[in-house]
Amino acid sequence: MSSSLVVCEVDESLKAKLKKFRFRKETNNAAILMKIDMEKQLVILEEEYEDISLDELRDELPERQPRFIVYSYKYVHDDGRVSYPLCFIFSSPMGCKPLQQMMYAGSKTRLVQAAELTKVFETRNADDLTEEWLKNQLGLFG
Figure 1 (cartoon, rainbow, N blue to C red):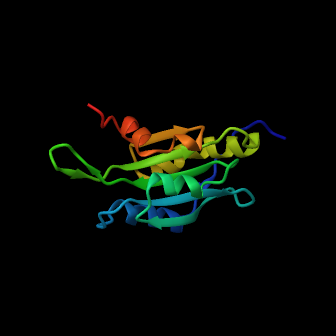
Figure 2: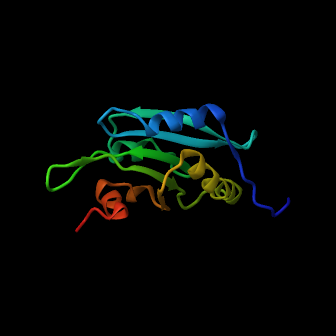
């Protein structure tokens, strides 16, 4: 087995979906869940969710497999303003297969570039995926 890092391409239809998602007009929390097709070495859409909390999303994640998530988060500021930060979350739980972990880690940057996102976070424990964790990541606490 070669030790070179495998970087997967991003599926063209997924790129289009991510672009559309960035400019969505809905005002609810929403997510795009993505996985790697190991045979095709391609990042593909696994599932789309509308009106989903991080708690609900956490329940959708496989226990021992990495996933990429793009999450549109409705945040109401103390002064009443509302913003919708778009977050890229790389969930890479403990216990993943090393090859799978390497493929996801190696493909993360390409996917972030394809999605044109700047708020990029990573978690090794799906239990961390809470609204409080996200607010901390986004620097929304004082």
